Image (cartoon, rainbow over all chains, first blue to last red; front, side, top):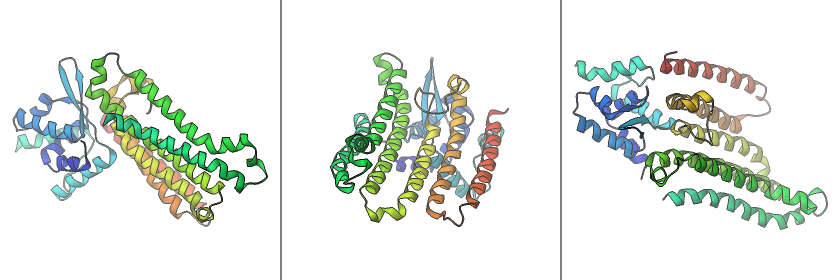
Length: 111
Length: 219
């Protein structure tokens, strides 16, 4: 059951918001997503399962690979934007630019 | 659950037909002589919109089902059903809008005077609400045979479809908000200013969205 409650719960986590920001640039496999984070693949896989359950991402099978793609509505995008803005005090908000998204996702690895 | 989601469409236009059937007899009393006295025009006025809603429903459903990949495995696929659910939601809100307009038309024809002052505004507000709802769901659509910006390029490239409908969704939501607010606040006095403001706002919005789209696609 995809409720707005589960969507808000999924959006409350910073890593999951970063995954959504990353998926703005296009569909990716769980391996490609996990490679951009310090967390282990099972952790990222769990985050993806939460996002999938909340209906914020959908999956598409292409041959042997399963691609995760963004499945948020306009108001869910707005909620993500506001939560990111609230979490970072307005210094860091999601942007659709590919370069910006890649830089933001890479940040935990640089730290 | 899936069947219940499909049933709600039928419930909406069935409610429209039921209301029409009840109103049909009362129209003769409301118009004892004149155009609406003849059975032909009276039937046309009372049943046109529910029939249109039923036709829209049948067309969209048949297009969706015809475009499903063949085989029971594809029918059971989560991906097929997720994409279908979004089209089903959009279709539901369109049918609900058509039936709401139908209710307003019947109420005006039946001379419900309490509705006269705000019936015109209600149509504009309902249209705005429909645009907000449909625009909100647009980013969740995937290439399909029934709804969306179906060009050769967007149908051939799933990624292009997704980014086009995401940005298109933002535009439709903003247009919907402007429409709904206009429906509430526009008066005869500020009417000449509004088209200019909407034109200016629409132009700016299109420019901003195009720039963001270009950033995503790296044109």
